[in-house]
Image (cartoon, rainbow, N blue to C red; front, side):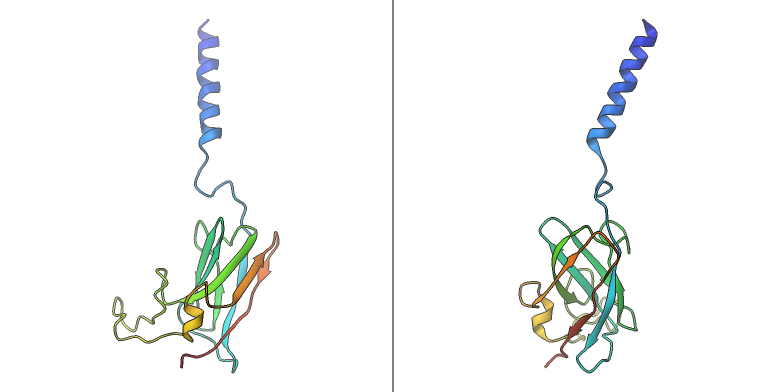
Length: 143
């Protein structure tokens, strides 16, 4: 009888673990990388690339060479399959301004032309597929 009770407790515990899941752990992600450059070929050297989808979002810091790697659930883990509207911001909050000194956004200026600061106006849309994805982004300089 004791064996049956222990087996029942084990099965109940196993089922509750299977139902609860973890945040994002069950959603496969795929590598997403690329560069952000101006029309003259020079790289955007600061900021963040944001991918906003209907079900998921991802972002990645832009390096000094203009390169980025997206992360959804952890840094650089990629993004789930889907279509995303893309925009450029200054930090993870998407402010669109360069941090000249830590926390000093007031003295910064726009990174790119204003249209790229919003997913609604950027005109940038990419589809992440179940493979390694590379999206090179070309933007205009601020006016």
